[in-house]
Length: 160
View 1 (spheres, rainbow, N blue to C red):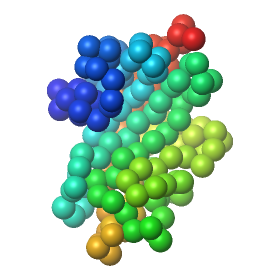
View 2 (cartoon, rainbow, N blue to C red):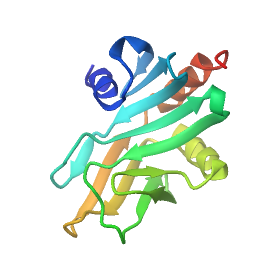
View 3 (spheres, rainbow, N blue to C red):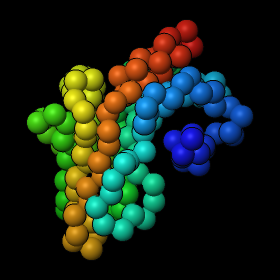
């Protein structure tokens, strides 16, 4: 239920607007009819260094914007402006486009590659360097990720 509380605390729409589509191990799937959007979401399991905020990874769907399976991460701390945000999944590494606290896939092709990697691996790490020069490493377990992503996709399949 920590995951559910994180969802409500980090997203801007009213709590009543979000419907749980299911909790699958450490991943959850949610629908927000006010936007409309659906997303799979997980809070990091392990954080290196002192966290400034809850970190999470999500895969989002916005049917009205024709956006499907967009990968996003919120870092546990602000990163240095000259550091990269790297995702490590099952031996593959991806460099994200990022601002101080968030990272996204560079394009739809990278989204697809990250989602495929999420479906076949056991864990994921998000790495960068904090503003204080110390490493940021946010770790995620991926059991349940594929099911949560599928539930979010189905949850938005009829919304337009």
